[in-house]
Amino acid sequence: MHEQLIPDITDNEIPSLVEKISILNLNEILSLKNRIESQLSKDILYLESQGIDMNSKLITNDGYPRQDIDDLVRVTLTRRDIIQRRNDLSMVINKSHKLLEEQLQKKNNSENVTTGDNKSMVEIPSAKLPPFALFEEVEPHGPIAKSGIKDGDKLVSLGKITIINGGLSKISKEVHPQKPIRIDIMRDDVQLKFEVIPNNQWGGAGLLGCKLTKL
Image 1 (spheres, rainbow, N blue to C red):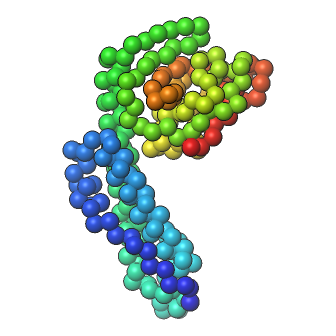
Image 2 (image 1 turned 90 degrees about the horizontal axis):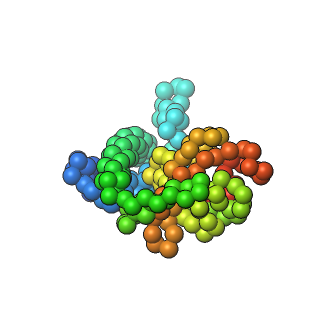
């Protein structure tokens, strides 16, 4: 038998908050997202403690309940909860995208744009999304440096990628040679916007000329 592990997987407020998703603001949505992800992690941890996953059979080939699982009822309910939480998480992420787009549109109507050589920078008074990566080893002649981004700047968004929809793991899909891309960064508690043109002919490795480290 496996070591008995029954995590605290109940967050009774989540279902009611999901039902009210249409009236939640962006910060509330992000908080709800974190709570759902936390519960999902606990659910999955419990299944792993039983040596199974979402696809494992709970019945033997002879049609009997598996004897190596401590609590088949709890396992069944946990797998049901995981399916529900994943659906809730998808709904919450979609809502956050919509709110973020609305927020950015409002900012675009009032932002102050300044342009310089090979760069476009916009100061955004208040950031709503936290940064998820740190710019390091910015090459002086690379696309990132030419845009105006510096070592120590913190990445808030790259194209459509933010902390809420993939973070660093999705960045490679957004970066293409000679295709301009918007990058929002945080510098000294001020959020700035840059336009970067990735390319593979600037004389160094990669399309951007920098290292991104997860925060």
